[in-house]
Length: 245
Image (cartoon, rainbow, N blue to C red):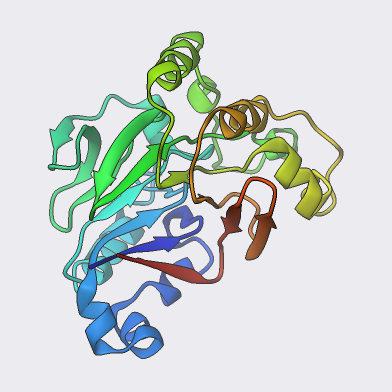
């Protein structure tokens, strides 16, 4: 049994669906490994429910429905769901999720929560600073909920006082020091910025034990190994990862 992990989806804005189709995954992993996939996790910026994107969402759902496993997304920074009230559902992974679509099942994982997926214990983070607010891109919106609330932060830190052993962390951006080490803390062409979510991730990284983090957000495929902590940080965008039990 295995969990498929992928980077930002953006509602398939620039062809991100191409590496997530049944045909591509069977070709990449072979039929038997493909059949072992029980869940697909997008590492933020799923981009579902974007205003005016109904026709494209319908195409995405039809394509995803050809695969036999549900889709869960970490909450990113560009997420219309942040400005919505979505129904919650219990799908048997240890906590409620925000339901986006029933068939195929598409849902968002909650920030600061712990989920059991295919035998793995995940701490789910999420969110990041939207550095492109200044560009005023037509049709793009932002929501104040992109950053964690004080209540969410307090609840997470309280949780970590008694529970700090996890298999993996699922987040959107990574810890601040890792982001800086890999990317200089900069998106291409941007100025240096302070991301409170990355700083929160840094705090969490120092408090927990885990094998590794899986991140999106940076639109690159990069792997960093911290030998001192004995963990890795895998950033995904144009590649996918199969986490096998």
